[in-house]
Image 1 (cartoon, rainbow, N blue to C red):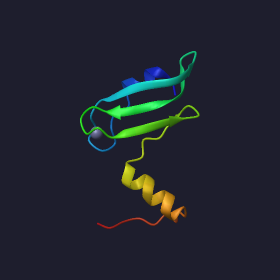
Image 2 (cartoon, rainbow, N blue to C red):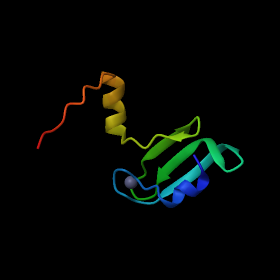
Image 3 (cartoon, rainbow, N blue to C red):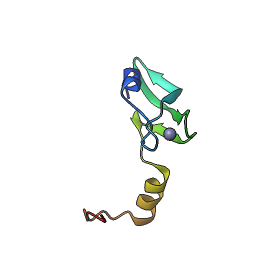
Image 4 (cartoon, rainbow, N blue to C red):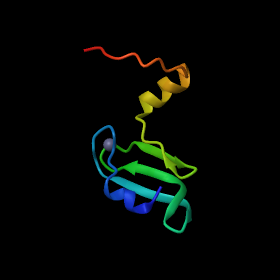
Length: 75
Ligand SMILES: [Zn+2]
């Protein structure tokens, strides 16, 4: 991800500001690192240049299920 993406990124849980920690960078692209929410302390990894901004609960659900059916809607 480009570092200027930080201008538009926010925590998916609380919309709080994210703090970028860079582990590996190339030109303007962050290849590996971590985004941390200052408000709720949630962490989001950046791998292969892609920030994983899924909320932890969703991350676990997808890992457990793996199968997405496109079913919508409690509501
Ligand atoms: Zn947050």
